[in-house]
Amino acid sequence: MTTGTKDSPEKSLNFLEEIIEADLRSGKYHSILTRFPPEPNGYLHIGHSKSICLNFGLAIKYGGKTNLRFDDTNPVTEETEYVESIKEDIRWLGFEWANELYASDYFDILFDYAVDLIRRGLAYVDDSSSDEIAELKGTPTTPGSRSQYASRSIEENLHLFIAMRDGKFGDGQKVLRAKIDMTSSNMHLRDPIMYRIKHAEHHRTGKKWCIYPLYDFAHGQSDSIEKVTHSICTLEFVTHRPLYDWFIEKLEIFASRQFEFARLNLSFTVMSKRKLLQLVQEKYVGGWDDPRMPTISGYRRRGYTPESIRTFAEKVGVQKRDNLIDVSLLEFCIREHLNKIALRKMVIFDPLKIVITNFSDDVEFLSSEDNPEDPGTGRREIPFSRELFIEREDFSENPPKKFFRLSLGQKVRLKSAYIIQCDKVIKDENGKIVELLCSYLAESKSGSDISGLKVQGTLHWVSVKHAITAEVFLYDRLFRVEDPSNEEGDFKDYINPVSLHVVKAAYCEPSLRNARFGERYQFIRKGYFCLDRTSSEEKLIFNRTVTLKDTWAKEAKKQ
RNA sequence: UGCCCGAUAGUAUAAAGGUAGUACGACAGAUUUUGGUUCUGUUUGUCGAGGUUCGAAUCCUCGUCGGGCAACCA
Image 1 (tube, rainbow, N blue to C red):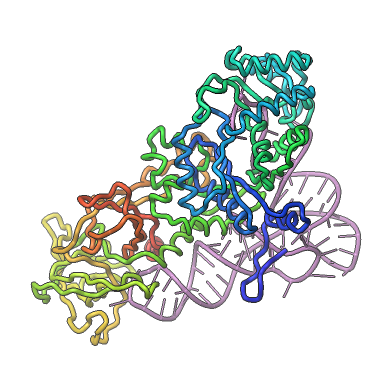
Image 2 (cartoon, rainbow, N blue to C red; image 1 turned 45 degrees about the horizontal axis):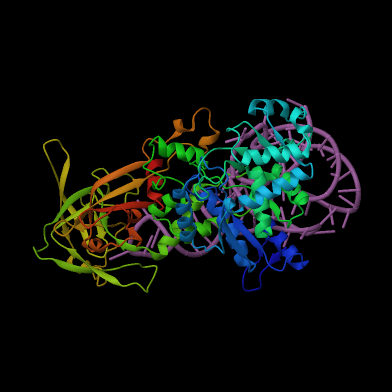
């Protein structure tokens, strides 16, 4: 099944699009409603963005709507802080929900549904302890058997369930179970628990309830109440689907349907909320929005754009097979976008002073394009003077093969300025290079070069006198191995010990004094950067979003 | 040992019985005042064995491998 015209290349439909188009074509639905159902017990990560782009994207594509529904049935792990962060992240990604809803909005209806099931002999109150329940449940290969309490009368069950609601029992003393089949090969059908007692305060309903429904008794019915047409979730819920359908069928309510896709995994990181929470709590990172975290807030702070993440979600596709996406695809997406929009700047991380011996003591302002990829952007004036900083690694006394940078007696171009030549190397008593004496070719000025010379390398530079300083955070991948969750032992043993490198004082061209939050920069030959949220006028702080592709690093490694 | 999913280049993802294609990566070259960008080219794949068919990645059978399922989590 494909769409597209001669003008646009044919794009095949993913399996969800095929299902939706079939449902629309057959007249089963006239419009679709999806939902994004996060549990407010942690921050959203890049894996969620796949689900968000899917649920919202499908609705947009087919003219439907998407609800944001917080799956808040477990009061002890859920907090308002997470609700707020989740909303912010979804909006930042560029999506707007039709309704902001909560599973807890339905606690009254759900209670009535449970009573209905009891009345029809399809649910019972069980006094067994959690150990006893587990014991009688059997195992995937051996059938379970029913609890002695399963034979209570409807009246007794009703009475007991209401007493549960009214707080007559302590936590764990009783549960309400669906009466299905203790011998089912599907463990979820072995009389699943519908309600448990938790004398806990809920972030929305406060102290109103002391019994709370479990996921299986809340999710499908919530979908049904909202008339969600396509309830899209991840693969681990496949085995829950018969139960999802069972409740809907027995309750005789709107038949939402569940479809499952494979969750996103990214190389060199972890994607489980539990593990991410551990990284935060045990201070391996600075917080949920640490730029090394695979959270949406982490990527945002690091300088990723919503566009790039949406493109990424589009490119990884949707399927039902397990996957481990190469992080280089994400990096490709952000580089592709930033290359188009980032303002070019020159910044020196590890300065080496050079003196242009034949240049006057004056300042000359040189013009440079803000973004060669976008003719719509302007140019800026950069001060050039007798004393400059270049990157220390851009000079070599014993240049390796194919070294196109500066060395004694060799010429290079200074970006948007002149061709220079290194005449003399000055060292201190320890032999460390402290300064280079160079000369420039006045007739080689950028834009009006009449020198006729061709040089192989172009370096970035800043004027010593005019440079401003900034702190720069350079990030590397958080883990040393591709799939930390799949390694022997604790995933934390595979954390990259040098995932953060801080440049205390980087020397920036003066125009960066006006750096703005949210604006993206390319530090020429270094990478893409943005202001960190902790940056201030007194102290500029930049985060490196991603490096530029560096083919020289590869070449140098080979040598 | 039971049930349910799944298996196409290194990683993802198309091909709905009819030429195995695309992206990322890797490699090579061209262009380049960013060793960036852009452009060109190359490389590598249908898990295995049978069967149906003129023809199978696709349908059937049996294997193999990977994942999920035994929370009062979602």
